[in-house]
Length: 153
Image (cartoon, rainbow, N blue to C red; front, side):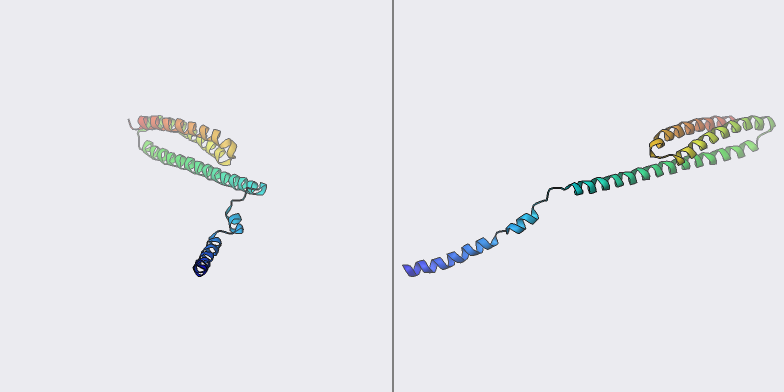
C-alpha cells in the first residue's frame, strides 16, 4: 500500500509543481496592468492634440484661400471672354457694353481686395473675411450674368 501511495505521490507532486509554474509571475501581471496616466502624459497628449488641431486648421485655411483664388481666376477668364465679345460689337452697342464691363471690373476689384484681405488674415478673422469674399463673388457673378445677357443681345 505504501508503495502505491509513493508511486502516486511522486506524479502528483510533479503535476502540482508544473501547475504552479504555469501561472503568471507577479512581475508579468504588473507589466500587463495599464499604468495610471501621469501629469506628464496628459501634458504630452494635450500638446499633441493642440498641434494636430493647429495643423488641421492651417490646412483648411490654406484650402479656403486656394479655392477663393481659383474662383476669382475663373471669373477673370469669363470677364476676358466677355470683353473680347464686346470688342466685336458696333459703336453704340460697344459703348453700352463698355459701361457694363467697367462696372464689372469695379466689382472684380472689390472681390480682389477681399481676396487679398483673406490671404493676409489670421485664423480668427478668416471666417468673416470668407463670408465677405463670398458676398463679393456673388455680386460679381450676378453682374457678369447681367453684362453677358446685355452684350449677347
